[in-house]
Image (cartoon, rainbow, N blue to C red; front, side, top):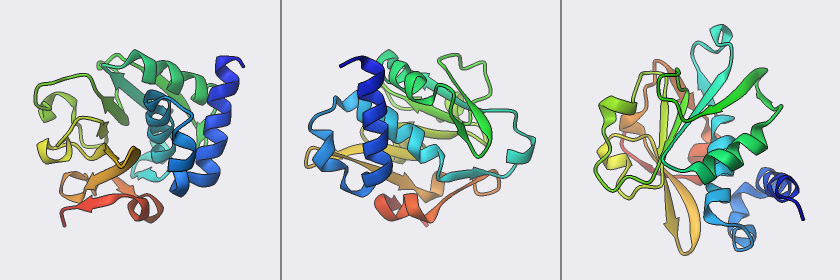
Length: 170
């Protein structure tokens, strides 16, 4: 089975059964599941300036596998009519930044701008200033969101995402 077909199948499964991801995650690699989560979570986030945005920019820092899968599953896709770009260039304006592969503490100043939603699989990421942590609970990836780190003037996180997440803060 070719790589694009596997990734497309994964996307369909997550879209249809995001709350029951555990049953499907066993047959996919963790980096594939994380890439799908990053993509799907963006559809539950609304940026205040969306009407002025030309694209929705995903910046992937530290994990080429997640970047490759995310690039494949977003190819030709849009979120609320915004074309999607995937890059590892932090000089771009990022709307969603996925940071991984760093053992040191998260440098909030380096990656955080008011309209950028930061996501990571790093332990204690939300306690270090990140917005969403992809934590592993009982071999299942589950988002944890710290509402104290959300920039409410610049974006909002939809209730459907909050419903499936562990929520900290406010």
